[in-house]
Length: 158
Image (cartoon, rainbow, N blue to C red; front, side, top):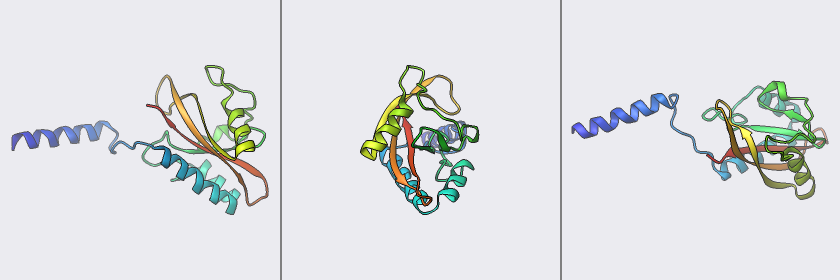
């Protein structure tokens, strides 16, 4: 009985040090699902969906994992919706990651030629130091305003 109490104690301690939530492991299926549902939302209501993304509303910014969020480019590689508001409106055309990969251009070019796909690059994980490998899924969608957008979300390799 003492052993069971000890195990429960350590589970509670780990829960507290994990920020009060159980670990949320993002899968490829999670990423595809949030991109697909966001694409459907943008097709129905661009401005309303963009506002929710920019305001960091769930599911566009996951309430359990701040590193799991949706972001949207226009076809000129400018961010039009992102939960980090200061990124919205910025052009990232030609801007590489820290290892020189122009992943944003690759995402938009891939969407324009193949509609959907995956791109891997190096990026800083929210709330952590250092550079991590990130894999992002993208989907080209026609918004309710008649413009085309590239909806993205990703997962970190670690």
